[in-house]
Amino acid sequence: MKVSVRGGFSDRNKIKPENTMIQNKEFDKRTRIQLYDMIINFYEEVYKGHSASAPSIQGFLGYIRVNIYSEMINPYYTHSQDKIFRALKDTFLNETYDDVLTVVESLVRYLDKYLKDTNRTSYYDDYLKKYTKLSLYQISNKYFEREFIGYRFVGEFITPISDSTEIDSINECLSNSLNSVKAHIFKANKLLADRSHPDYENSIKESISAVEAMCEIITGLTGKEATLGNMLKNLEDKGIEIHKGLISAFNKLYGYTSDANGIRHAGDIGGSSSTFEEAKFMLVTCCAFINYLTALNAD
Image (cartoon, rainbow, N blue to C red; front, top):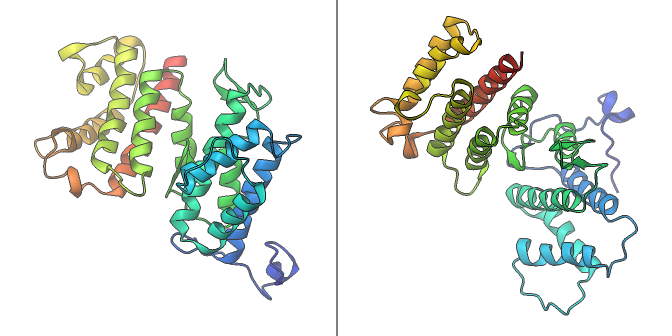
């Protein structure tokens, strides 16, 4: 066995330094082991005190067989914990980076939902709609950061985004108490994060729609009057003062998505021509603007 301790004596003194290159499409062995160990730790913590034959654990093991490995199962069959974790270990150690991230995303989402559904108020306050401690998504991001993985959980989805400020901005927006705003941002992030079939055009559309929804709520404008340009002008009437330069900048950005060749009219800039960089920029920018309006409206 090879010693590999990040921050250990050998690493600190650059004798046998650990990897510090951002890993996007190739994961080293250490990273794969750390991600597998993370899932094991989550599993043991969530199902602490449960026997392998308990319905909770059997449901989790069955989910893995059906939803991750596409196996047909006998509902009267007791799933083998050892067999399934051997399969997971093989995936983490030997399969491609996207398969590893697909498994991580699926299992973390399942375990997070289980904790919420079983009314673990020590984990999540359903009344306030907020976590009462570090969520599994946040803990996963700490692993990703430590192992120099070029992805982060943003909401429920693993996204190729590495700037912590951007992540915080999106997550703050996903915690917005206004459901119509949150729904658009959730959809924009989901469309952006889909590694198999990303839809950048509609991700951009959902991001700007979230800003429109926020402005509609604040201004009370509806119908034909509820254009973003008109609503931005009316914010001041509601006691929200925004620097004219910022309003001008956002109007120009809105114009980019709305002109004759823009995203929202499904023209040349949209569709297959939309890029990940454009969609990511719009998502982060719109989230930051919504958070800014939320703070001003609360004053």
